[in-house]
Length: 345
Image (cartoon, rainbow, N blue to C red; front, side, top):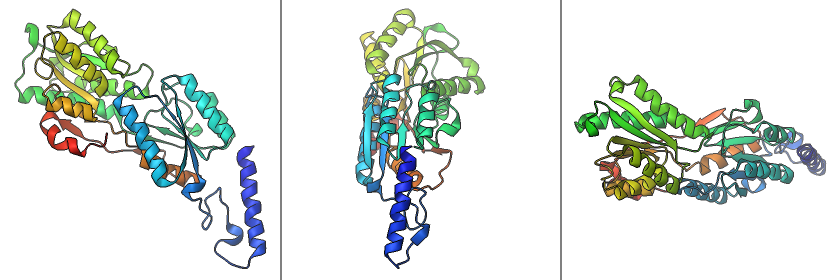
C-alpha cells in the first residue's frame, strides 16, 4: 500500500544516512512515520486533506477561512474540498485524499451515517482520520479523534438562558395561553450537531423546575440557511403567529432569516418573540445590538489551529485524546456591543 511504501522509503533513507555518517542525533532509531525522537516531521512535510460541508452559512464560511488560515500559518499543506452539502461529494473527496496519500484526513460530516465503507478504505490505506465539529455513528476504530464543541450542552444552554430571562423580565405568554409557546428552527436533518442541539434543548425543558410552563408549538428544519429559516418562520407565523412567544434557532443564519419574516408579519423580533440562536457570529451580534435578538450561544468555528496541531501530532505518531472539546460562551444582548469588536467571525 502507499502508506507502507512511504514508510519503507523513509526507513531506507534513514538507514542510508546512518551508514554514511558517524554522527548521532537519532541514528538507527530514526523513523519518520512513527514520530520517533530525532525524526519528527516538520509542518512543511505534512499534508492534510479536509472535506468541508459547504458554504451554507456565515458560520461555515468563517470555519473554512479559519482552517485555511491555520494551515497556512502552521506551514501545513492543505488539500481542501467543498462538498456543497452533499454526502456523496464528501465521500469522493475522502477517496481523492486517499489516492493522494495525504498524511491526515479531516472532515466535518454532513450527516451521521453512511461513512463506514470510505472510513475503512482510509484505515486500509493507513491514513488517520480526524472528525471536526460533527460526529458519525461509525465504528470508533475507523477514526483517531473527534474535535468538537458540545452541541448537547449548547442546546441546554439556550433553554436555560431563556428560562432565566423569562423569569427576570416577568414575561407572560402571548395569546392568553398559560404556557410559553416555543417555535424551533432545527438544523440539517441527519446532522449530529443538529440532533444534539435539539435534544439538549428539549431535555433542558423536561428537566427544568418550571419546564411545565413551556411547550414546543412547532419544530421544523430550516436547513441551516437564512433563506430556509425565513421560509419556515413565515409558515409558522401564518398558522400560529399570535401564539409564538419564543424562537429557538439552531444557528444564527436561520434566526436572521426568521427575523425578516417576523418583521414582515408586523411583529417586533426580540420583543414580541424572544429569539435565541446558536453560533454567535457577527451577524447575530449586530441583530442583538439592534434589539432584534436576545441571546447567542457560542459555537466557535475556530477549529483550525487545534486541527493543525492535532494533525501534526498524529503524523508524528504521537497519541491524542479520543475526543477534544473546545470551550465556548453565552452572549446576551446586553453584552453584544462590548463583545462585537472581539469577534473573529
